[in-house]
Amino acid sequence: MKLRGVTKSYGGVRSRTVLRDVVLEVGRGEFVAIMGESGIGKSTLLNVIAGLDIPDAGTVMLDEIELTALDDHRRTEIRRRSMGFVFQAFHLLPHLTVGRNVRLPLDLLGVDPANAAQRMQAMLDAVGIGAMARDYPRSLSGGEAQRAAIARALVHEPALVLADEPTGNLDAENAAEVLSLLREQVKQRGAACVLVTHSAAAARSADRVYELTTAGLMPRDV
Image (cartoon, rainbow, N blue to C red; front, side, top):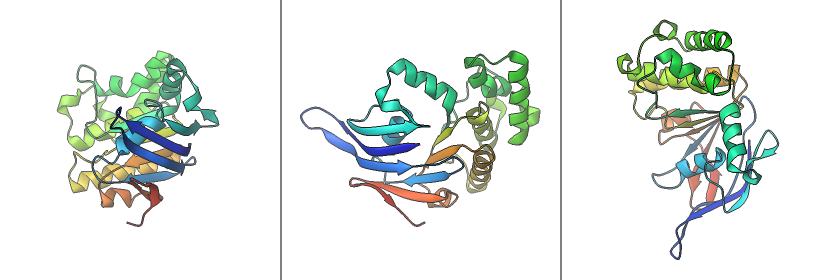
């Protein structure tokens, strides 16, 4: 994934520049963290990377495909096939079992049901909640719910995983376990991962750490 000169502003006459000339490159198997104060534009940056927002200037590339040059339909196709998402609030669908939540990306891609079921179970086993496929999200602890969310993000073997404050709702012990699991699974599957976080402890799990400021994206030590 490559960002080159990405700039994004919001508003009309009193517009505010949220992203300014952002440059970032993340290779397969790399785990990169982005820190920054609240409201600085971290979620906007993730939305631009995902093709949900279009920058005012600059390019976003995924596997040599320029997302910024595509229409909404094509960007949606690429998100569905090539990206996985992990959120702070888990976003598991309450009316579906854990197993059906995890296999949802495969169902949307039209994967054969038997194959989808097998891949779903293997992914749940990999994140340590293989016995919970028939449970519903309401019965899970926070750590278990985030494990299910990681399984859902990775089950279709995406090229890029975007994680938005994935430990924000977890205690320190569960946060450390979830981050270790996310890092391990991303690297095993050769995905690129961009983690957005306020937590220095979470950022220390990354291969590289950046801070988003009004001047752009800067390397940071944690």
